[in-house]
Image 1: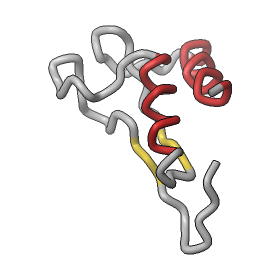
Image 2 (image 1 turned 90 degrees about the vertical axis):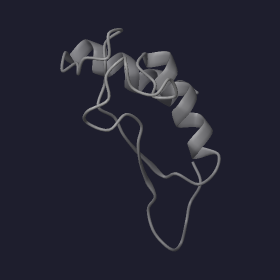
Image 3 (image 1 turned 45 degrees about the horizontal axis):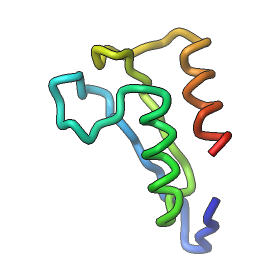
Length: 76
């Protein structure tokens, strides 16, 4: 992870409201969250805020799914 002495850059990968019909660049799978998270970490993001989505783009609050999303990002 990149360390920035001037502050913390927080990335919100999906925002609270995007659904599947939202722009195609908004990730909706654990793999997509990881891929996008890593891409932004490489340019200076130091923290990722994730509102996880299911395959239809609906917000998911199930702990096992959220854990899978976090593990994918940590493994990259």
